[in-house]
Length: 398
Image (tube, rainbow, N blue to C red; front, side, top):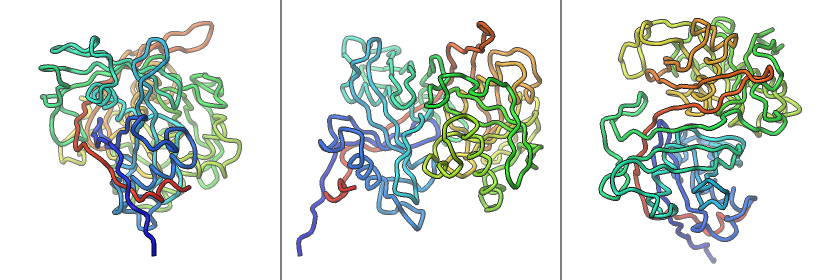
């Protein structure tokens, strides 16, 4: 009996922010996977270890959470004013599909370091010491990200004293600028508020009428008041992820919000679009104990935010959702802004399950439309392993 041999593909396993993913140079992928389609998706599913009915991804590189079931493809950019193109694939854990509908803000922090180390950036643009500026085209949503990557002795500096709640060890700080972050999602027309309203009402079966801020910034996000759905905003993962009824209600809310945002035409389509939109609930500041055991004091934050990712409460905060939080907080009248006390602001520090995070954004109103030119956030990144991933050669068969 003939057996399919394994093939090996150059890859790097990186942590970016509070996520981990397998990074590839486009040129290193098998020819069939260098273009979008079934072969590419089948390969990435096999690399990560999906679909896995056990929900563990034991036979792959995935970590069986939304934060660790991720893949990235990077290539030199032919787009003017950009160094590299960055494509993100969120791999379903138990389903046979890869969601290409949005970005990963956390892994965005690792794209610049990976591009430099992989020889994808013109050497003349990389200082031996100092900070390298990497201009990234985020291909999923058609937006620009500028990464400021520290360099020491001609190599990417990965160690340092920058601490990020949700990551155990300190590392070097990577500053990110998300330019013009209103996501240009299909059906949303590039509008920051796809319905034209700062606050809408959704009629959600099993929940009732819920006020929501629907925003396209960083990633399409549905913000609701925590109290309106029975929460305080201080919840940790176990309080929600162990409650199947709560998870189902959040998914119903997400599906109805996606329809209102124009991202899907019918709620039945939401199951094939797990990565976007996100659902987050907000509340005014309150003290709580983070998952690390550290006390987060109410006076040290502007508001509380908890966010759902791929059907579960995130252990910290998705980077793209943090951009949405910062953007919404800067616009008077949104539910995020009101939870933070209202008024104008250019930065916000919010509490999440692992601790706190600060994100900045400056909003202006032009011809009655809100605009945000960029959102600012700091993350860190580190190479965990580099070499080759191996997959059976039949892994390229859809």
